[in-house]
Length: 198
Image (cartoon, rainbow, N blue to C red):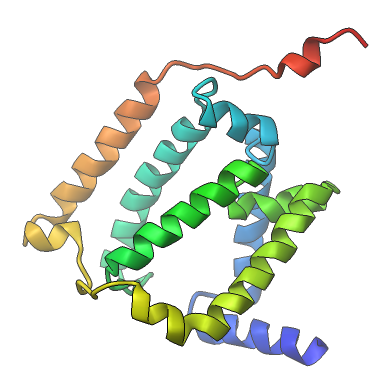
């Protein structure tokens, strides 16, 4: 098992994304932000699902908007690279449905599971174990699953339809997200159970 972990670290280090320590630092910062914003709490996701809490969409829109701008300039400067995955419509629809079901049942995004596990939440640990088992099943069954995911539409990007205007597209996209996040009313879900007499 120790050899497998060492191999994993070696793969990360050889991908050219920076040192393992840089990756770990970014991971810890990401986890700290999730903890600070309380996005690892079931109540936050449950409130979002019943349209009684706007923290999740506002946080997501702000993150995607700022990340899009930052990532664009990093790639243009040669500090970052990316690989566009092909659009396989059937796989996206099936994957989206499964992701949504898991999100509703466990009340967390996958990235928040490990933060919740660090807080000692058993439900999150069950989610992590289930996710790893699901990944194993998917890997083993991929040749069979691949036959039912529909046609491959190729590596499509929005900027490909507006050749030469990629910066403008990124700015418009980020601006729309930031303005929408700002205009969304600040609503925080209060679990009725918190107000019951003890």
